[in-house]
Image (tube, rainbow, N blue to C red; front, side):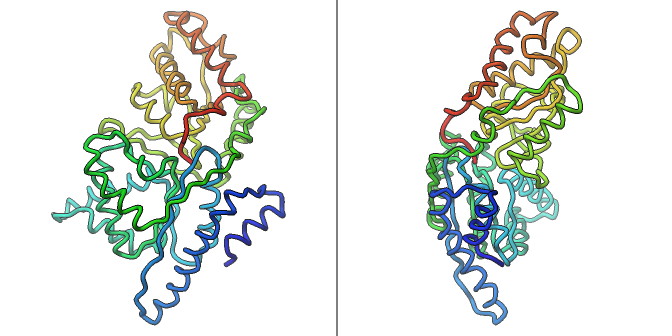
Length: 360
């Protein structure tokens, strides 16, 4: 298959990408990995033992193209490779460990890690971050087993390794994992001055009303521009021992309906966890709010507060303009602040100075 440099150059020539010096600078690292793992794949035919190359931990701010470059790299490989969002992968690991325990094994991580290692040569994680203590206690032993089995790990993240699980409970137990990452992976900061995702939204409508076929088509077009046309996986957030599922998530962009997020018994901790992971939320079908859906309206207010404080971009379809969404019933006066925030979040430059760094 073509190498990453050629794939990238072809896309620039076709006008699909704009050349970026920060993206070009990291390509030799990807090419180093591709070249070695493909050669080693051929050596395995002759049963030669080979030391796997160091992986790559690519971190940086919003919309710099980390996920895009990793996707191009994955498409260039001719060895067994899997690209997966880190949260989705850890959910699979928890499920696998649960099944392994049913067999009576003492170490439930070992068979799960062995199954992963059998299926891939390269494992590409998008948006690696650790927020949950359970994941923090598992991930070190899991990665140690994967590295020992010769799996090459590529990861994108919003944070440098030293900031993973920052301020987390019993973080001192997590520090050996950070040291392991630095040993087995090249740490690279992508510090492009360009925020391509912000550019896609700049000046474009982000609030569509009324709800209907036209609004849904416009919302879907924004989703495709930001997340790509590929099938998106669910995002599973583990919050206080519970799993909260967001139906679609890719490249830092989440997509859900009003009912998914506000029609369920969710609370501030759930919305804060969502705001900590996503950069853009595409929210569909916000209804007229009032006495008949008072609880849902309260959750919506809490959701908007979480998104606003975290500077998450919101693209949505709604039954009415913000000031007309909640015009009667208990809480309508308090909704004025939410309407004001919804209006502010439509601004051309809103979110441009979002918390830094943010998942990529």
